[in-house]
Length: 131
Image (cartoon, rainbow, N blue to C red; front, side, top):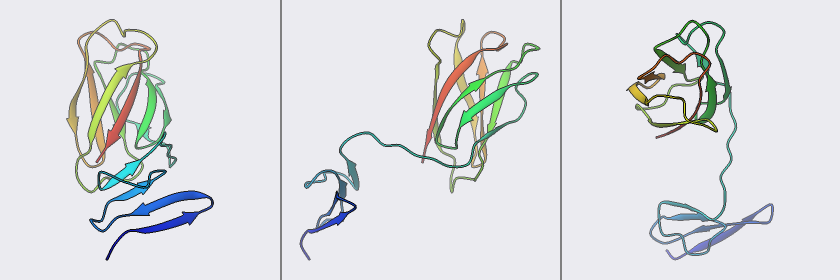
């Protein structure tokens, strides 16, 4: 079959005989190999239990959560669209330590829950979810 090279709006898209697809590279070494940064967009996620007046910016793949007041012990992030299977989600403190240990306690096709060793009042954290 051989390799095929496509140009879409001046962006190189390479497909190899092994089925690997590369964007910005002519020799993709994985099923999807992207040279450079990846951006995404989509419908915003929403929040379930997460204190009083919490907020979320971002989408199902990545975002920033600010926990509400009233000392919530956990925050549930609801995806705008379900994943086919439960995704892998990673969280980190936003710009500074949240003052305690944050961890993902449960992940499902439609949501994930973050818990903390301390109250999450007004704590900000980043999340990234992938399937």
